[in-house]
Image (cartoon, rainbow, N blue to C red; front, side, top):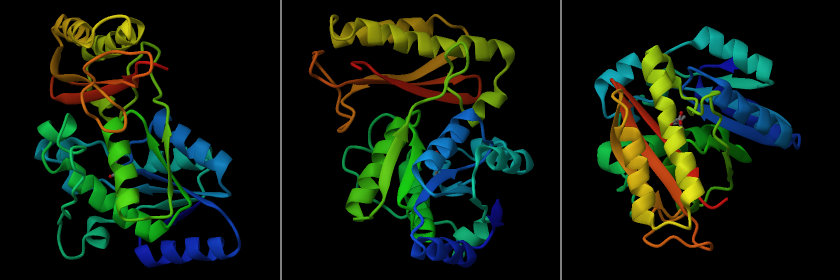
Length: 282
Ligand code: PAF
């Protein structure tokens, strides 16, 4: 596995491989890797000749300074895990390399996509994500890029970015990987106490129940069920529960067998913010 810290060498390496006809799969990450990330790397490995993974904790997508400060940084074990998962190249730049002129987000117009759910509670977050993802795409120029469905709204924003910028990159959403109790894997889970971790699996239980209820029950009732299951926990504080169309992220008002819907939830367990989602009619 080759490790690059600078932009030009990694770009050149990829360009040379592409000249030789090799397909490139790309997995952008912020490190603190878990099985969810490794599943993306493994899928990229099955579908491409070579896999590039980036590790960069992007300061401009954190709207909360403490979250940025506490974000786990585990580069040595990340590199070991990537090597084991079959990654060929790691791009691990410093902040100076990515933002030589200082941290500045571009402002994108994603219409409604970045205004709802996460957008309401994390102002500027998606502009920060889109800015770094565009930079990384320009550097790596992959054929395919892999993102977890756990960050469902991010996935739709990245798809919109690729359409807007007319990039020749296939964006692939990969299934959420869960702990035995159902809690979606996240780098932030390492900051949960044992009791918070146990209680956090209620988010999954609420989503599963929502899936069972859809489309037989009215959307409001399904949403209410999610709220009640999460509110019943003393460890969790619900931020939002929405049932939306997967492409537009507009609220689904009427459940229907032919109406696609995704239930999305954000909740706090102490100072740790957790998000999760589930397709309701699949
Ligand atoms: O999902 C993440 O880890 C980050 O938002 C991403 C896509 C690597 C951009 O910093």
